[in-house]
Image 1 (cartoon, rainbow, N blue to C red):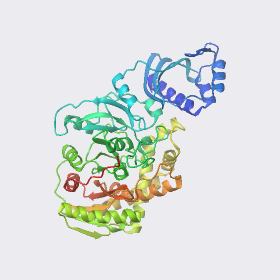
Image 2: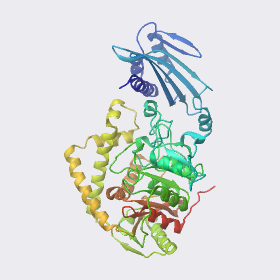
Image 3: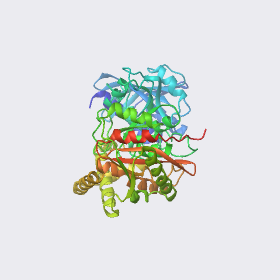
Image 4: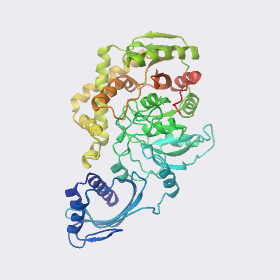
Length: 523
């Protein structure tokens, strides 16, 4: 590891300890002796003992997020780190630390902290970001990134999930420690580059659940973005920031990822259109992985026309859909009111598109449970393989629910994973045989309407498990799934998902464009 990377890791440890008011860890991160300094507008503290006493007397530091970190290496054992910080109230700050390496590793020898209006290396974007909702946006511009060419997406503004590379900006993946350790991307993720070449522009980088391992849309560090359908409702995740931005009209297109439903669930909860493409149809270069065997890049829009237009830019043409199948076994997994509303919506879609629709069972309960269990096992193991080393190097940095999912993934032994992979291969073959060319299978995009952020943990777990049983099938089959806002249940939107054969992505979005279903949140 290079000196700058080592110092970034040390700063991340410091920020974690500061946020938790972990006094022993903070003491260990400051160099011992009488020539260690800490300064702010109130004066200068001289000696490790004086700094330690100050911390014990103040009762913790205000919450903050590191928005950028700059490290300069002086020697192999000496470096300066300058962190740009942001508090929830919008106050910006600078923290300058001189780090030296000794027998105990990297420690701070000199620190200076300031807050208030400060010069910034990203002045224009910072000014926009201060006016934006920090639970939705990490950084915003006007635009943040201009289009590279003119094309069919001229004027389309994009909210990019903080999981995809945007040149000149680091990927934070919903975690302030990871953001502090990250370096700016050298190039755009290829999918984003293609959108820019088609005329779209980046409005900003939007929030995500930590490391994208959640369907709720909440984040312990940044809060829950606003769902315009009701105060205190979750947006759905992990593409929560882009979903909120699009639903509230702050962006036209939300570019995100879908591993187990992270496009489709926010689409359902927020009354949006969304597409999870065929697995492997779009490059994942420049995208932080969660579970590569299931990861896809997808997007959200308010109208079906733009959803289809983006699909036409990014994906090849497909043979048209010729029939619809309502999967009665999957509809029955949703709440009763949702199931009833979506059954009626399926008939409306058939009438609007001119396609015949029939009802049928897609999977048996026994094979569904086997595939679901195998999916969760392999997803967890792949997630741990992708992030386990970082999690172990930065203990305590994740929220409890997400930390537990990674812990569960770490516990899956190779023999268990190997058996699950065999089950998944069987499931993929079966689904690809049953979902044939020209067929779109209709099912709920989520099992319920958007639950409240304040719902008890046990109830959230029930929502998550029920919805995952629906969304996992696209992952098991590696199949595309498009979502439309289909109906209102007690005033809240629910999405109807179309599951198609591999490669039928643009055919699915064309069906939704022919329906052009739109639901507007209350003003």
